Length: 313
Ligand SMILES: Nc1nc2c(ncn2[C@@H]2O[C@H](COP(=O)(O)OP(=O)(O)OP(=O)(O)O)[C@@H](O)[C@H]2O)c(=O)[nH]1
Ligand SMILES: [Mg+2]
Image 1 (spheres, helix red, strand yellow):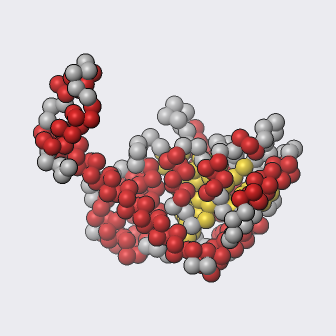
Image 2 (image 1 turned 90 degrees about the vertical axis):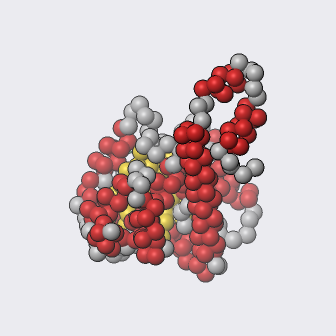
Image 3 (image 1 turned 120 degrees about the vertical axis):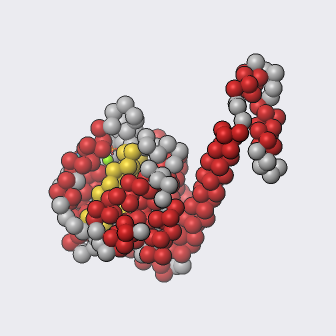
C-alpha cells in the first residue's frame, strides 16, 4: 500500500494517481478508500454550480487567489460539462487555471462525464476523499447545474454557491427551480454587464418568497473578470460555514451525505453483482427476442432472470 503512504506524506504524484485509480473504478479502489477513510472528514466542501458559460471556472480561479492569500490549501474538481462531441471545456479550465497549477497548495482535477457514465457522483466523491485524506483544507467542486447527476453532486457539498448571470432578455423565471433550492449563496457573476441589478433583485425576490426560517442566502454581485466581489463571496462562504457549525447543521449535512453515499453504493454493488451473474450464467438473446416480439412481458422476464441467479425475491 505504498501509494496511500506516499499520499499521506504529501506526495502530489500519489494524489494524482490515486484520483485516477478511483475515477477509473480500479479493482483496488475499495481497498484504497478503506485505507484513506480514517484520514478524511477534515476538508470543507464548496460546490460551485450554474449554467454553462456562467463563469464558474473564472470565479473559482479568482476564489483560489483569495483562499490562498488566507493560507488555505485547496483541491478543485471541475466536472467537465461538455458533451462527448466537444470536450473544449477541459482545455479551457486547464488554460485558465494554469497559473495555479504551479502552486503546491492547489490541486486541480478535471473530471469528464464520459469516462464515469452513471458513476459520476461516485467518481467525484472518491476524488473528494482522496484530496481530503491528502490534507486539503477546502475542496471546490465545479459542476454545470443542468443534469440531475450534476445537481446531485453539489448536494454533497457543505456550502453551495449558485452562479447566475445578468439575464439579458430572459428573466430569472427561467432558472430551474431545482437549482434555486440547492443554493446557500447566489452569485450574480458578470455584474459588469447590463441587467445585473435587475437579476439580483429578482433572485432576492424569489428567495424571499420562500419565507423559510434559518440561513438567508445572500445574493452577491461579482465580476470574475477583474475579481470584484470575490472577497465578499469568500467571506460569505466562511459565514455560512460558521452558521452551519453553530446551528448543528454541519453534522446534519454530513449525515445526509453519508446516507446518500451508502445508498448509492448499495445500489451500485447490487446492480453490478446482479448483472455480472446474469451475464455469466444466462444467455439473454432469446429472452430479449421474446419481449421484442411481445411473447413475453418485461416484468416477468426480469423476475425470471433474478430467480435464475437466486436473487432473493
Ligand atoms: N463580462 C464578463 N465575462 C465573464 C465574467 N466571468 C467570466 N466571463 C466570461 O464568460 C465566459 C465563460 O467563462 P467560464 O469561466 O469558462 O464559464 P464556466 O461557467 O466555467 O463555463 P463551463 O465550464 O463551460 O460551463 C468566458 O469567456 C469568460 O471570460 C465576468 O465577470 N464578466
Ligand atoms: Mg468551467
